[in-house]
Structures are given as structure tokens and as C-alpha cells.
Image (tube, rainbow, N blue to C red; front, side, top):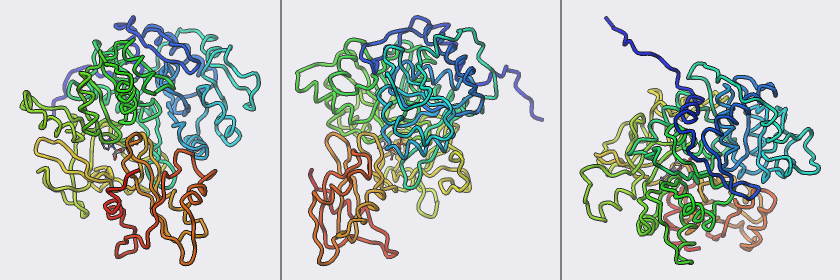
Length: 541
Ligand code: AMP
């Protein structure tokens, strides 16, 4: 007979992370570079108080449990207050990526049926552009103070964040509800077609915060000063806005300025011990240090994810005394899945062995199961040689996309297909060898190759076009178009690049065009991107 354990049950709620930090780490600091310019400083005590004021303000705006509230914002204290006030109230904090182009932003906000939209000053122009298309949004709130509100704006009833917060009391008991309640929402734009939403729960978010804080994961503690350079609109900022609050770590939020000069200044002045972000960011920081003969002093660890960390970057950061830990994750995983942390047996190993490990995407964090399968879904050995499709399972892995019925991403036995092709060694270290998806990743952001191709084949002289990502020293990858021209027709590189103008976000524009006589195809007529990438493997920008 089953005998039930006799322990208390406490729902895992996001508001509890904040109550804990406010009570036991009240004077730990949160430092933000603001959009308006100056550095803002306050503590977990202030974050708690203002989040309760904001939660009362949300009530006054008739935001109810289960409603989505959109944000278009950088990493800063007001965004953090929204993370806690919205989710803590039982509503859904929907972080929207402002780097998407306006049509995608509108689609995402309308699909989520956001009831309110909070946005930083930087995004006022884009919100003014799309406001009339946002059918569900009842309240537009500009995340600034009265002094910085625009004199006039085309947005009707534009509200001021500081007025809203300051006009409400901080008296509030966070509501208690089922831990499986939805807490936050993030859309991926990694595939073709419309972006897909991943709906996280309080339970998945708190479990992810526990697991990602572990010493072998991101190693977050009350002794850390953490700088999330990964934007808070990307997969909940890799969970750092939760794990840092859970542990009472000092938080350093870089706001809109994620360039080498500003990051260096913040690291040095705030004594940052750990920072996390995509490789592009570290490239800019290292170049700034090199050009100006600067040494980074406090940084002990840099967590790099989103794209592979080049070995030269690992070497250079080591010279500054910072250990690189690679993180593999996805929006669909909240996002942490694996980290490349060495084991006890690697203590004292030579530098080549260490670099070999750091070059891998890492071994699974407890709570995430990983395996590789062949095209018939048959499991493959974990011998570090066999490579196949990476599948994952776990308490912070999505079970289905938001408001979508059809799903070919899950197997019948409940594994999620990641779209990454990898090998896994006997210690669990996973290495990405390719992507089944052909999107291009530039500075941590996806560019859809199919979209680029579809546009270019619209040019009268183009017979066929393929977009591939080519390694780029700053942006990790940039798009190169490989083009077959129609017989008897001609077009120049500049003409084809100019053809994209006004059709896509500027940063999606391909960097170059290569003309070929034919493209490689499979027997069923599909483009063989892998072959094409091989063909252009020695291409240099
Ligand atoms: P996203 O959902 O935008 O975070 O993108 C997830 C995808 O980014 C993964 O499926 C991988 O293809 C890629 N990715 C994430 N982390 C890494 C990493 N450390 N190295 C290489 N690729 C990565």
C-alpha cells in the first residue's frame, strides 16, 4: 500500500521568490543603467515595495488572472518590477522581443491578446507605429517618469509608469494559487511561419530557478554580483531575474547599452563576478579591452549561450581571469538545458582537455533528460561519436505551443525535438554538430532563411535563392545569399541587396550575394543546405 509522506505542501510561486529576497536580502542592491541615461540604484526592499504598488496598479487597470501583459523593454529595474507584479498577481508577463520587425511584434501581441503594453522610451516610435493594429491592448504604459513623457503622442491615453506606481499603495498580500498557473510567455521566431509562444508556469519557473542556480549550472549565490547581458525579453533573461532574486545576489542590469565601453564600466564599477550573454557581447567587450589595454578585474565567470563560444574567446576571457561556461538552451526550455562545467575528475587536467570540454555545449542539468535519435526515432548511443537529433524531456520543457493545436515537435512518448543535431559522450557532454533548422543566428537573434529566400525569388532576374549563415567575427553568423539567375537575365550584388529595402528589418538584410550556376538538391527537390554550407565553408566576409 502506498504511504503518503507527511510534509507540508507549499505552491512554488514567483511572488515567494520576491518575498524571500525582500525579507532576507533586503539591502542587496539592484543597479540599472536607465534608458534615460543615469545609473539607478535600489535594493530588494525597494523592489518588493514597488512591485506591490505596481500589482495594485494592475488591479486598478482591471488586469485579471490569466490576462497577458506585454513588455517591450531592456534589462532594468522597471522591467524587473513587471516580472514580479504581473506574475505575482496571477497574470502572464509576456516579454516581447523589440528587435523583431513591427509586423511580427503586432502579430505576437495580438496572438497573445495582451491587455496592456508596457514599453521603454526607446520603443515609443515602434509602438506609435503599430498601436492602432493592437486589437486587445486596453492600456499603453510608457516606462518612464513624468519629466520624460512626450509632449504629445499619437497613442491615445498614454500612461506614465511612475505616475501609475506612485498613485498606488504598497499594501498587498500576494495571492496564493495553483503553482501550475501560467506565469509568463515568450515567442520564438526560430522557424518559418508565425512565431510560436511558449507559456511557462510558476512551478516550471521556480524549479528552473533552483536548478539553474546550482554550482554546476550558473552558480548563483548571495555572494554573486550578476550581470545578465542576455536581454530580459529573451527567454526570461535565461532565468536570471528569478534565480538572482531567489538567492539574493546583487543584480547589475545594463539597460540599452550593451556595448564594450558601457559593459566594461559597469563590470569594474559594480564588481560584477558573473555575467551571461551571447558570444557577440563578449566579442565587443574583449575588443574594447584590447584596443584600450584594459584588464577586467572582478569577473570570475562568463556564461555563454545562444550560439557556440569560439575557443579564442574562451582563451581571451581566461587571460582576464574569467572562466567560460557554455550553456545550451532554448526558449522551449525556459531556457537552461546543459552546461559545460568540468567534473571532479577533470581537476588539474591540461588546458587542451579543458578547452575541449568548454567547446562542447555541456552536460544535462538535473531535471532535464536528453537523448539522441536517428531519423526513425531510434535512440543512438552516447559514445561521443554517433550524432543524431537531440530530444529533451523535463519539468521546464514545453509540452505544447501556446494556442496551437498541431504539433509535430513532440514524439508519441513525450520527448521534445529540439531541431539540433548533436553527439553526446559517456559523461553526458553534448556537442552540436549542425542544426536541422536552417535559420541564421546573428548576434543571438534569429534570421529566417526561408523569408530571405522568398523575398529574393520575387526579383525578376532570380531563378532560385538560398540563404545560409556564414560565421562572422562579430555577429556569430550573417546571411549570405547564394543565387541562380534566370537564363539571359542579369543582376548585380547591390541591386539584389537593395531589393530587400523596406521588406524586412534592416539587420536581416543579407551581407553578400554569391552567384552560382546551380544549387544542390535532394532527390525530392529540397535544397541541400548542409552541402551548400560545406561548399561555402571557406567563404570569408
Ligand atoms: P532560442 O530558442 O532562440 O534560445 O534558440 C535555441 C537554439 O539556439 C538552440 O536550439 C541551438 O540551436 C542554439 N543554441 C543555444 N545555445 C547554444 C550553444 N551554447 N551553442 C550553440 N548553439 C546554441
